[in-house]
Image (cartoon, rainbow, N blue to C red; front, side, top):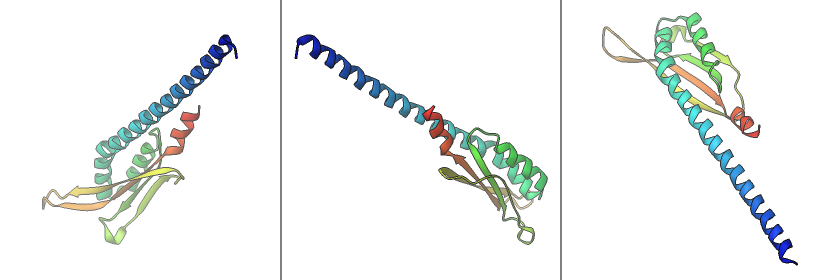
Length: 142
């Protein structure tokens, strides 16, 4: 093999290696970014939606709970949300919005209501949300 052919082969192989390496690195960084954004979204739910849902469950305001769950579904990767009421044993209820999907992460948040008269915390219910990992994988493929 001539020197020029060997140099050309070496150049092509090095170019292919660096192209594959940079593509893999970019996919990894995009996955890390999307996963971080999803975790921040879940923290946002915990800080902003949970307190409002605690009050709505305590007040048995089903209409407000439904509105809040529908608002949760407007977040980028949230595909399912459900509130289970534990506080009112005689009138326990479940309210959900969205659809359960495969390849989803489930996060559960207790809905704790602080009784203003006794000062005690009471378990009012539970918020369950599912975030869709499939959407993240699909974004990586495009």
